[in-house]
Amino acid sequence: MITKVLFLCVHNSARSQMAEAYLKKFGGDDFITDSAGLEPGTLNPLAIEVMKEEGINISMNTTHGVFDYFKQGKIFQYVVTVCDKEASDRCPIFPGMNEKINWSFPDPSKFTGTHEEKLEQTRKVRDQIRQAVLEFIEKIKSEN
Image 1 (cartoon, rainbow, N blue to C red):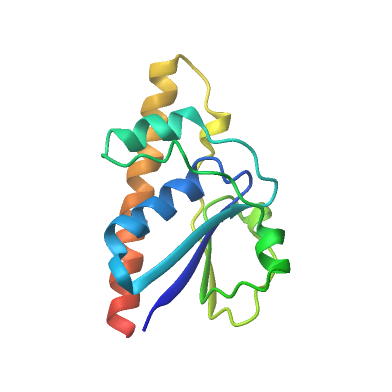
Image 2 (image 1 turned 120 degrees about the vertical axis):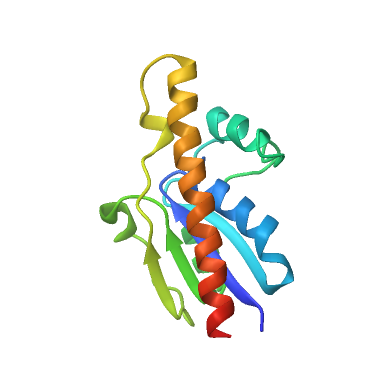
């Protein structure tokens, strides 16, 4: 069975893009994944840079709006929000959705400091997202 997953955050510029990329890399043919934002923005250069360190190029990705997916009638078994609970609560309920999961990760667009300090903070978020995605894959595979 193929599991359809939507990763969602506020701008679809960093956290949801990283989660989507990791599920594509590690989930194989068992998953179809998209990412979107409540208010789509532009890709965060810090996210692009830290994912390149992992050998994953997201620089050509575009951002998407969650309400566009909703209007298109897209169906996802899992909607995983990677933002804070307040933003997560603003997400639509998709028909056919089995479960909505919230993974609250810090927003790289709000990091302060030098470029290197912001990069280090973004790496920590990236690593937390990678771990969460790997655990999610194991959970889904054990249930199927």
